[in-house]
Image (cartoon, rainbow, N blue to C red; front, side, top):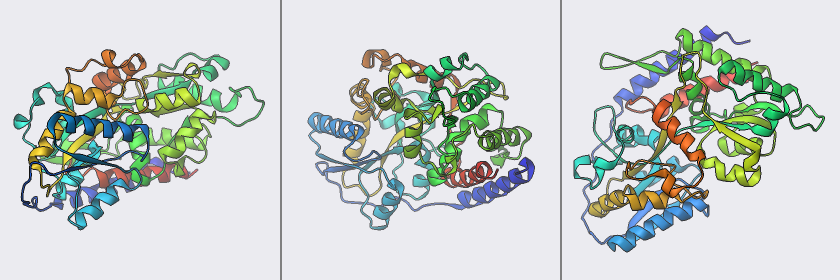
Length: 418
């Protein structure tokens, strides 16, 4: 049995080492390249090739080309996306535009492979929400990306299972845990077999999934990774609230309310466990609604906000995607025009893709876009309210990626050790 305090101290040391390393990280400036305002813009987007979302990215680029006359090519890559960017950087053959996670900002800026942005020189910048701009700034206050999409997370719960076990929608962590236990022990699907669980957890260390997933629970429990201290941050993963939150996570894994293979699951492997009836509670994003509607049925599940935790409130991870203007482009003017188009009302509307599963804009960052005018599905409003009322981005540190990865490895060890 793992004791919370010693394991938390291990995490603290790991985070402290990461902080020292990331503080020292610094990249060189952008390469000067001869400019051609008619040069083709090569756009990379982190989406599965041949997916509906990849098709939407192509539609967005085509609309940009039609509007400006600047030609584009779109490459959709999902697996090992960041590795391929590093390989392109090493070969001095970066794409012109990358649309990728906000969490990659510090790493890419630190490596000097993205251009600094002056928001005052970006058409339409005043229409973007202040919170989204926060996700495009580095620790030195400079802006190295243009916000493109935002999102937050909510609980997907098997409604038919909840009704079968006679439970109400959970409004507290105690009620949530009680529901998970009922899903695990009371045969909610009625098939006579002991083959269901409470929580789906993508607990793999790949891309820091364990930490990424659990951060919402950690914060809602009153814990945290870091706290501001003077001009920097101090690790607080060994605080009493953090340790209690991780003990709760381990207990859920060890008492069997989390699916057994959680420590090895990436998100692509976790999604089927919810839609196929292995587990009935899944904290995930709005991008899964279309898939679960098709494979499970919209009438079989419900979406509710994460209840307030021991910290007294719900504090859910906010994230999204930025448009990164890559260093070394032969068409810097075209890069900026693409970013301006992507965040315009037209660009955001194209990216939202209505109620289909092809969206590359989950929640619009342009305040002039009304979700209800683009999407008929009212469940999007739940995510919008969570994002606006109870979400937070990861701390603005020199590089979040190594902290995410180190904490994921520690959290993964905790839930794997029963």
